[in-house]
Amino acid sequence: MREGRRIIDAHSHFLPDEIRRGASFYSDEWGKIEVQLESMEKVGIDQAILSYPTTDVSLKGLLTEAQEARVYNQAMGEATKRYPGKFRWTALAPIFNGHAKDELTRATEELGASGVSLASSYSGIYLDDERFYPLYESARELGVPIFVHTTTNQPIGSERVQDPLLTPVIEFTFDLTICIGKMMMSGTLERFSDLIFVFPHFGGVLPFLRERFDTTYTMLRRRGYVRELGALPSEHLKKVYVDMSGATSPLMMKCALELFGYDHILWGSDYPSNTKTSDSITRLEELDLPEVAKVALLGANSERIVG
Image (cartoon, rainbow, N blue to C red; front, side, top):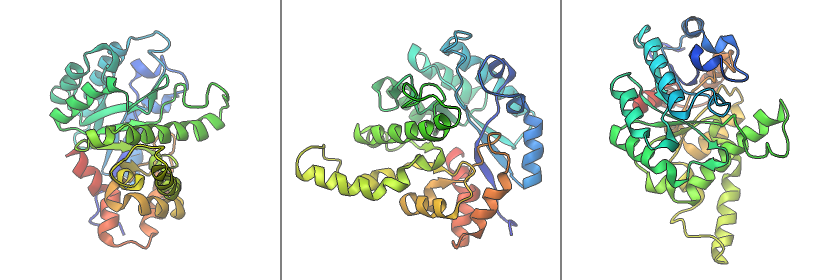
């Protein structure tokens, strides 16, 4: 069934020991790239794009933001070179110290990074903030995509509720949703329309809010309560890219397809948070979609984005 298809995992993680040992939450399995490779070969995954899952090492004062980026990028470059063709990875850049361009250039041109890793927010600062603009300009110059991960540090709502299940399930998801919404409403997505932003987990709850976004926006425009976007919110949202993050529900997949279309969705596993990678691939293959769509979702879209 998978003959002739190239499967690329657009949402996967590996943490070098220098980062993982100082961070909260992450177990040893996040640092075993050899085990990850064995899992990929067993399932039939040709390549994985590794992105930063966000950690608290800089918040704990163990490393500065610049040190965290440099240590991570160096280790990722060295680790992935041991397995040619099997991994791509996205680099960290020190956003708030003014040296993002230098480190991103080093990571891409010297170490082999294929993109940029960002969190959905940084202590309440979302990606529509102008402090991210220099990084976006650098990514534009280098021609690399931006892979966004849900923040694991102080997501929206965490100041009121901190729960080991509710925080990652609800607060992480809504932090991502707010991030994309703010980027749309601020004009950031339009300003950097030539950049590719890839958001995980189907973009949070955006597929379920598509109709409400459009009807509410239309009503508010009639009353002059919201700025003119030039098009319905759904028209702006369908321009971003999202990944599947190991989803197995056909209904979720169809809902996302209705908003984003098959050319803007990437298959991804969210490994090692999710180790049942074959289930998601099987459910996707069972969808009533043309072969060209399945080829695009399983790997062609990712390959087009990272080159």
